[in-house]
Image (cartoon, rainbow, N blue to C red; front, top):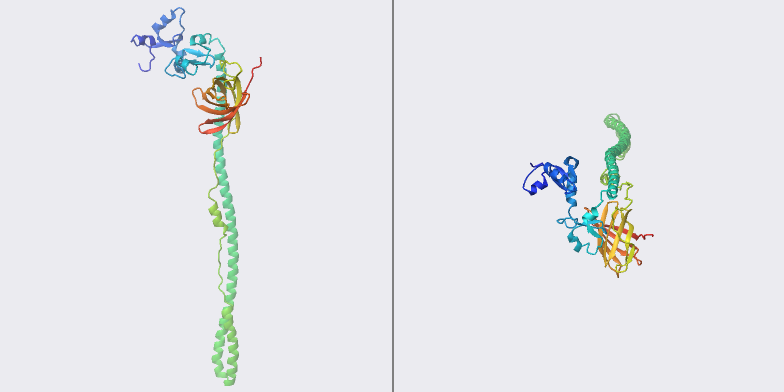
Length: 403
């Protein structure tokens, strides 16, 4: 019967019977037969069907039986000063100097009729409201991330298109300039070609004239004619060596282009940014059963015993908290609450230097170390807190009770 719950009473008698009900008085599973016996007790025990008790209820009931400090010891006492269920071992430890300690039975008397459960239910409902708001914000954030991704990709595409458009325009400009300079070169080359063709024909004609002059001139005429042709031939030779040039098209890239390519490592940077959500929920009061202390000055610890209020800074924002402190023989104890939840503190205070150090322990969660300085009148303390290697400032002020 691995998935069946068995009667606790029968198991003690080495029997295995399936439990169908739960005895609220004994806080144990009972079978159908044992349930009848429990109902016949005087006064009768309250029997509840298992269908009316959730698995989480069983876990909470079992966990709550044991001391939060000594996990192997059952809670049998209650410290009113620290609003905490404790075991016998606690009497010689953290609660050795506490006076308001009663049995757990006495402390629990009338608990269901009191306001503590109603207050807790209200706080839980408030937290559920905040949780739902937070969930809504997270879902909205998830949707916005999809849009942000799409927008960024579109921006990258737009930047690329703008770059390509500009490069196309530059390419068009240089293409037109190439065409213009090419036409100029072609025109000059053609002009040189025409001149050279004309000179070639004239020189060939002169060469033919020399041969024909030999036939139709005497020596004097031939000599004079040759000298005349020699002068004009020299002019042709000079023109051949000075007026002919080679025309070329050359391209010189913009020297800024390699620099631009080298500088353009990426299209941009993608980074994550986080902003704390303003959920507008700070617990408006301490839990009902809190540290029961008077507002007094403890000359042995140089601090004000009683109620304090303050704030700690995180990400440049102030987070308020409330705290009841007891200064006794150089020791500091107390309980408080902030937007994270309920916490206890324990530490020391040096009378001469007014230095105070304590650890802030959230119930079932992390702890924070505080170190600060008490003012001369013992009504204010300031300092630093440290958690997980990060540190920031805190300030606390004593709140006197008006009677």
